[in-house]
Image (cartoon, rainbow, N blue to C red; front, side, top):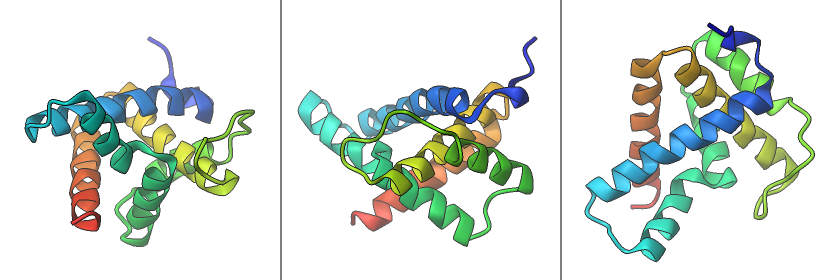
Length: 131
C-alpha cells in the first residue's frame, strides 16, 4: 500500500477537493434540491475557495484540528500551485488548497470518521452563515 502521508499538498488537495464535493452534493440532494442549476449554485456556498478558506480559518480559530491535521493543512496551503481560483485572490486560494489537502489526507489515510465529523461541521457552519 502507498504511504499517503508522503504525498505533496497538491496531490492531497486534488483528492480532497473531489471527496469534499461529493459529501456536499449528497447533502444538497438529501435536502431535496433536484434542479441542476440550483444544486450548482448551492454547492458553491460550500466548495468555493472563499467558502473553504472561511471554513478552515474557523476550524483553526476554534482549535478543532489536531497538530497532525494542521500539518497537512499547511502542506497544502504552502504548496506551489501554477493555477489559481477564478473568483479568489492568491492567499484565499492557497488557504482553500490547504483545506482540500486536509480532506484528502484524512480520506486517503482511511480516517473516514474524522473526515465526516469535520465535513458535518463545515456543512453546519455554512448553513449558519447563510441563514
